[in-house]
Amino acid sequence: MPAAVLAFAVIIQVSLIGQITTTKYTVGTIAFEGNNSVSSKELRGIVKLKEPQLWNTTEFNRRSLKLDTFNVRNFYQTKGFLNVVVEESFELQYDNSTNIVFKIKEGPRSILRSVEIEGNRLVDETRILRLLGLRIGRPLNLTALGHNYSLLEYEYHKLGKLMFNMEHSYSPGEDIDLNLLMNEGPDIYIDSVAVIGLETVEPHFVLRELAFKSGDRYNSELVQLSERQLFETSLFALVDIVPKKSSREGDWVDVTVDVQELGKRDLMIEPGFAHIPSSSSGGEPVSGIEGAVRLVDRNLYNSGLRLGLRSTIDLPIDAIVNRGSVPVIFRSNISLSNNWILRLRAPNTIRFFVDRAPELLRVDEPILRYGVEWTGLKRYSEESILRGGLRWTRIISDRMTVEEQEKEQQRSVSLRFRHRELDNLITPRDGWSLTLDSEVVGWILGGTHDYYKLEFDYRRFLPLPRGRVLAFRSKIGRMERLNQTSPYIPSYDLFYLGGSTSLRGWPAQRYLTVEQDGVERPVGGLIKVLFSSEVRIPLTGFFGIDLFVDGGILAVKLEELTEQLDAWKNGEGWNYGAELTISTPLGPVRIYYAVPLTHPKDAILNLGVPYAF
Image (cartoon, rainbow, N blue to C red; front, side, top):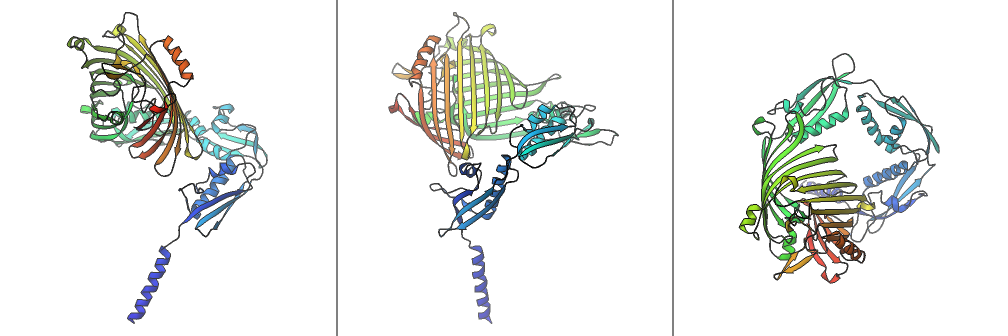
């Protein structure tokens, strides 16, 4: 009996091992048959299963194959092949690889011949077609029509038409006559507004951020604005504004504002990679490691004021690589922020600051800055903001005499406009941004110096096949004294180029240098031109490669700019190179090799974090 039990146990164990141990298969070749209108190369970019490349292979499984069949069919339908049929098959090879074949019957391509719209009173036909992405004479894309329906729905919800719906119909064929039937529904009005989820915050601080009130016609755009304004208070981790049918007779809804409070106070330690601001107000940022300690009181004495205390230590990577030393930057500030001035919503902050920046390969001497700054913010949309400020700064340098230190101060007014449409703020793949900076130092404000500064920054990101990204950046800057009798602009305010975030073929802030007293010092300019272009190529795992070209000009006057433009055309001020990127939880790390075009022997191997732009 024991022998029989032992034999049975052995059989069960062998059976389980056979079930648990499975062979892993990889993707071999991928072929497409019947694809007369779409190239095989384009279809390979659609499927998730990939043919082997160098050391990179893709594991094969039937679920992924089914998903890829759906992806190919859906892609064809976006091209107007509404009756496409896609069948998949595979064949196992002796080396455990799998050869895959997609057989495609494209069928006729459906072209949109006409669109007839009925029932639309509030939104005209041209806008409806634009929102739905419908174009006469182009293939009918039902997938996009479904996705874009939410845009049209939102447009009607802005007009109080919460009950809006749309039906579409057509007769199959090569020429499609599409019928759209709009049911706009009645105007919906707000009956009551209720706030739930509050624990310590007074309801007043919620209600004053709402862009709507009882009795208003419902407007989804104002609802989104209200949610954004509530998040901007920094009091809430969650905000959800939901309408529901009111018990009141007629077309009314009750609106519930459901919030979840953040803790009143937080002590946070924030390590990470950062673009460290230059100790020169006109210098480009430098890649570095930043450690910050931040204390926040989100509702000081239940007044709606936010108190923030923040201290940072910055370690610039450029200094480590190029100098062998680690100059440390200390920054500390205390800020008070509020979204309201009396009964006017005007987000503003007053900040008391002190910065100590040692020589950082950028300017001639260590600088201590301390002072006070007020900034106000106007947000036109989620993408566009206008920020203005007033600033008083006392500046102390080791190279100044005691008398100069007592006099040196700056009073300035600044204005910045930024519009940003990016799919990701840290690693963008698509979109663009535009920033315009202006500052006037002195003039009627007084102080030691009188000059203006203007800067233009444009960035564009274009997605390419296989996850690649083509990125461009252009920056133009100009500063000048307000009049001929004004003091010269000090070195710590000039424009500088060079380093991991600008001209990568030169050390940080040392595109132009001059030797003084046996020390090589950076030279700044009053006119700056910077251009960068790169292709970002993802590799396997956490790695990627960027191929880049940078070009820059620094000039003191317009006559010099003309000469440098001529030299620029001949390659002066340009560099090219490649960088290996490594993705980390704190952001990408870059190891780059950059070659100045006219001085290839001065090539630089350096580090940068995160991306150059």
